[in-house]
Structures are given as structure tokens and as C-alpha cells.
Length: 352
Image (cartoon, rainbow, N blue to C red; front, side, top):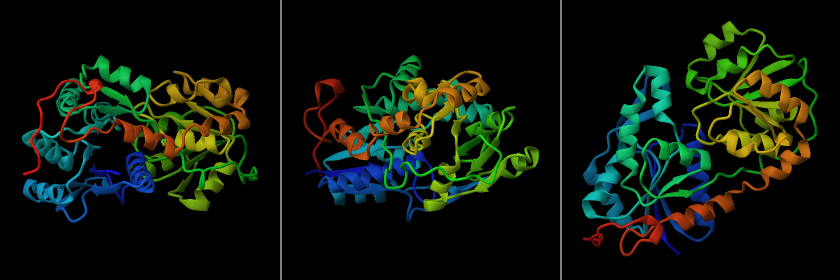
């Protein structure tokens, strides 16, 4: 069994797909018998991001980070995020000629362009520099890999899919909703980069349920009084929302996968989405829902063709055990020879 270091700037109390993915991956790797250390922002000085108080920008000390790595003596290092901790660990690995892997979780170029008008070329240039040092870069879907190649990423790319917690998300009896049907459900952050307003402004029959919170909630709640904003839900309260829904709507164009999509399928709910990375790779049959550049058209198609049993069957492909085995097979030793697919790198130094 191996000693695996997972490096992430995204961690609790954040609630998002990256945090859930890294938490479940760490848990599952430990179940496999590996020793895992998650290097995250706990104990590192930092500040909260304006309008996103649960997200912290930390200021890690390179010396302390190196000391923690040295003490743990990992066999494998995986850098999840391109934030301050990820940058420090990347630089330490480069300085010592250690091999490491990375993964691409968030379309920051598109987020920053939408929120702050930052040119795509600037952010993609930084991300290419960051990830081209990796052997390999892991992506969740073929469409994301094609997108990164189109933006000039050169590092070896390996697939790392996602899983669904079937203890929480599974078929339940249809719950009678106190709303006019059909019930259209969105679960996620209520923020402008998630494109929630594209869903809210649809002229569709039924009731729109919004589960989640975020900086845009107050404005959108006033602007769309007919929608039901239920706030942040977990556990049984969350699964009750799924059990009332006839359709799940995923309006984001900037997510790289969309864990909530497979969570909805696991509950037997078809999905309507834009043909963006993630949904376009998952919703490959009309019985699972529909992707369309016209989100209203996707809703109409998915309500007509979605099939509960097909959704449930498709979700069974997405287990945390399966995707963690993918992740495990993609890891590279920090020293020694790399797999052929990882490219040619300068032999690294050993631990000092």
C-alpha cells in the first residue's frame, strides 16, 4: 500500500463538487488500505473572499509546507487546485524534481470572464503553465479533455470520472409536492457563474425549486417571486427535494462535470442541461434527459423522454470505488521511472 498526499485549496466549510470529490476520494483510498494525508487550508493564515465567505485565500509558508511533506514521505503527490497551496506544492516538487499529478476541476477562465471580464487567454495561459508540469493531468470527461487540448494543454491527460453516494442518493417513492407540477429542481450554488438565472427566466409550466444558497440568492428571489427558494439542504431534507422533482435542470456552462447531475439520475430524475462539458458526456440517451442550446427546449424534451428506470441504471456506472480505482491507477511515483504515457522527465532527486 502507498502513502498518498492530496493537495487542495478547496476544503470544508466549502460545499462544492471539488470538496466532495476530494473527501470521498480520500475516504475510499483509505478503504483500499492506503495512507492518505489531505493538505488543505486548516491552520494556515488567510482571508475570506468577498461575497464568498466560506472560501478562503490562504498564505502558506513554503518552509512549513515542505516540512509537512518531508515528514509524511509520500509515494505519490496529487495537486487538485491551482490556488496558493497548490502553487507552493507545485514549486516544491519542481525544485526537487519530484513527479506529481494534477486534476482540472473548475473552468476558472470562464468564471473570471463572466464575473470580472478577465480575458480567457490570460487565465488559460496561467493554467497551461500550472498543469503542463504534471504527469499526468486528470480530467473527468472526454469533452473536457478536448477543450483543454484546444486551449493548448500539452501534459499527458488521463481519465478520472466521478461517483455518487448511493446511501444518500437513491430511488425513493414519489413525494407529493405542495407545488403546481411539473416540479423543476435546481441544486447548487446560487451565484451568477452557475447561470441560475437562465433557468429562472424560462417560460415553462410548473414550479421551479431552488435548493442552495449564494451571493445571488437575494437578488434572484426578488426578481423571480414565483420560484421557490428553499435554501441550503442536506441529508433527508435534500433527498426530500429530489423526491418531489419531475426534472432536474442544470443550467451551468462552466462546470467540468456536475456531480448533481449523476445524483439526480441516481434518484431516478432525468436532467435538462446545456450541451456543456459534463452533461454532454453523461446525458448520452434521451431516456436520461436532454441537452440543448435552448434550455427551454431541453426541459421540454427531457420531460417527454426521460425514464426513471434508465436514469437509475445509468447512475450505477458512477461509483466512488470505480472512479477512485481510476485515480489510483493514474498516480505516478514521485521518484523513479514514469509510465510511458507520462512522457519524458528529468530523473528526480531522492528525499534529502
